[in-house]
Length: 230
Image 1: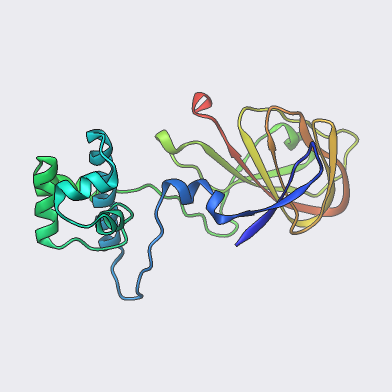
Image 2 (image 1 turned 90 degrees about the vertical axis):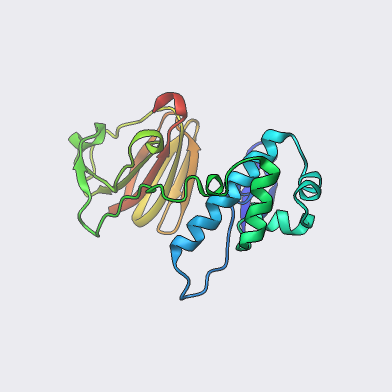
């Protein structure tokens, strides 16, 4: 899978493949058979994260750590990327090498990871600067605590008006058009947006719809706030 990125300075475009995604560099992806319980994957993920963390704390490479444990480098790499299930003997070797108990390798597997599910049409209405112009904002849920970095809104514009609000905020915003057509401004540029179009930008630049061309307009707005703003 790849996407097209455009250098706004040079005007040249290039294809960005999945290998450039942050999630591919910091996370893991695993194949799961239809009958495999998800909690088994959670256990493998916990072991992977703990082994990777402990190895890095020891300041050892994957190869050096594999020698100390007594397994192949390829096997340790699979363990750290949750690509295999550890046998009891392998778990015992890992625990011995790190001088910890076997159960310490499972730390974090029993944590309840937060999630918010919102049924269609059941998002909570919220007030923003554009509400006075007849714009409707529906929150699509928000996590709490350290995960409260995303603000997701379904925005509906049903009335044109003489004035349109411009927004500025810390972080990065992503828009995805669902219905209608509009001109959307950011900083010194204006983008004609139709269904299927998307726009991602620095939230510090003044932005907002400047002309509503085809009503009603609906688009998804996702804002990722920096840690300092949470």
